[in-house]
Each structure stands twice: as structure tokens, then as C-alpha cells.
Length: 402
Image (cartoon, rainbow, N blue to C red; front, top):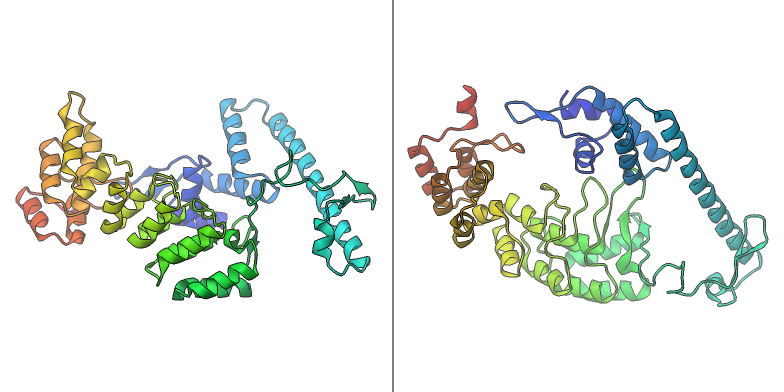
């Protein structure tokens, strides 16, 4: 079955399937000669089971761990394993219910007691939480940094993208109105760390730094906006929640926004953070895949690690030659990948070098049904296309006999 058929039958989107593959919840499917994913029909049941377990409160990590445990002992004691984990989850949920009940009853006491300032009430050092039965629970409120308390500045709140404050902040970012953004941050403590979106199981959310770096990027005063948000406490490596887990740096790379990329790196962003939509790689993987060459070269200048594929895509001849200088040359499949990347980037010299090192002229990658000639055509390099034609390179259509 194709990805779209599986997704429709399980009532999810195609990106969810790919996300589950990256998380190890679904086996990577076989591919047709044309490069399309071909899933077994049993994948529908697997996806439905995952979604059901999520609705019951299990995290994806917990589900993956259960699936590994079941796979290690096929047909043996599955019911016992599932029942045991369900029992643990039940205890966790009951504890959460008790905690939520205590929160509710505490707020009721604050409101019913006619507090002029409920926030001042709960911030008082003598404050204690009311238990679910109406009795006092615990002791004095834990101070920030004490054992068992949430580290100061680490908690993120999620608000709707339609919240007036969220709308105003996004508008200020997109128009480059740094003064208004600074005012909003001052009027709303913690705004720099909020997430915009929803926390539903199938929901998505992002940070204000993601808003700065969102496609197409290049918003006015982008670098200054990053600096203001970071100074107000924004987490520079916070991740998007959804089908992928990209950081703001990944999004800046996908938008070819060098100024914002530099601002994020100056603020301490992890230049090699994983999570890209391309093979869960670093920001450089997104930059090369989407042909954001300005950002790609800047990442390399600032110390990003490069593999053979990236070196081919960027035409970094010194790094390519270093890979083949010793006696232990890369495998032929990696050479073909790098050759395809060089054609994707329109790098004639790199393509010529890699073909001489044994790359397959008409190699088709597993992620896209295009030959090196196909991707070179979209790169716009007439010189590269002419050279490939002279070598007898073919398009995917020609290989299929279309």
C-alpha cells in the first residue's frame, strides 16, 4: 500500500507516517523501482494502535519501548507485558488527576476567599497547596532551584496562535517592529518562552524564534528580533513540535536567511543539532536539500560538520579529495550519493571528480525518483547538463522507458 492509502485508512497524514519511521515506531518500507514507499497492509493496524495508545496517555518513547519489548519475544507473554505497562500508566494518570484536583481546589480557595490578588497569594512564601479533599498538602511552596521544583525559566506555556498576544507578537516580528515586540515582552513576562499552537496529540507548536525564521524568512530587523527574544529568555535550541523537530536554526537554514542564522549562532545555537526534515540531520542538511547556498556556505564557515554528501553538494574539493586520499575510500554507494548531490548543486568539478572515483552515472536516491541528470537540470547549470549528456547520462523517465 502507498503512504497515502495507509494514512487515509489510519486517519493520519503522510508526514505522521514518516515521523513514526524516524522514531522507530514503523519499519522503513520497501520501495518501488520508481522510489515510492510501499507499506505492508499491517501498517494500518500498527498506526491505529499507536494513536490509541497516545490517546491513553502513552508517550511515543513509551510506545516505542513497548514495541521493542514485544518484538524481542514474539508470541510470548504479550498480554502480561501490556497489562503491566498499562498498570504503571494508570498510576501515573491517577497521580496527575490528584495534582490537577489540588490545583483546582487551591484556586477555588483563592477565588472564594476574595483575594484581591490571587497571584500574590500563590507567590507568598507561606503558600501551601490545598489537597483534593480540601486539606492542606505538602508544606511551604518549593523555591526555584530546590529539589523537586521546576528549574527557573525552564517551563514553557503553549498558547493558541489566535491569542491576541500571540497575534500581536507575530505581527511585530514579521514587520520588524522591534519596539513593539520589546513592549509586549515587558508587559507579558515569559512571553519569550511560550509556544504558539496546541498540545493535542496530533497538534503542532512552535516558539517565537521559529516565527522569526519561518519561510520565506528575511523579515525586517530579523537579527535584532532574535537578540531581543534571546535577551528576554527565549530558548535558542527549542524544537518545533509536530511531524518533525527542527530548531530555529534549521528554519533559518531552510529560508537562506544568513543574518538571522548568524544571530542565532551568536546566541549559542547548536550548529550541528539534529532534527532536520531531511534525514533528521543538522541545519546544513536542510540548506543543501533546499539549495539555500548562502546559508550552507556560512554554516561551513562557522564550523558546521560536513559529510561526503554535503561536500559534493557544495563543491568543497579539498574535503572531497581528503576523503579519497587515504587507502580507505568511501563505499561506492556513498560516492554515488555525493555525485548526485554535486549534480543537485550544479558543481561540475565535484561531479567530474566523483564520477572518476566510481560513482554510478544514473544513480537514483531512495528519497527522490530523480537521476543525477534530472536534478542537474533543475540546478540550472548548463555546463553540468552538457557534460552529463556527453557521458550518456539518462533521465529517470528514459530509464523507465516512458
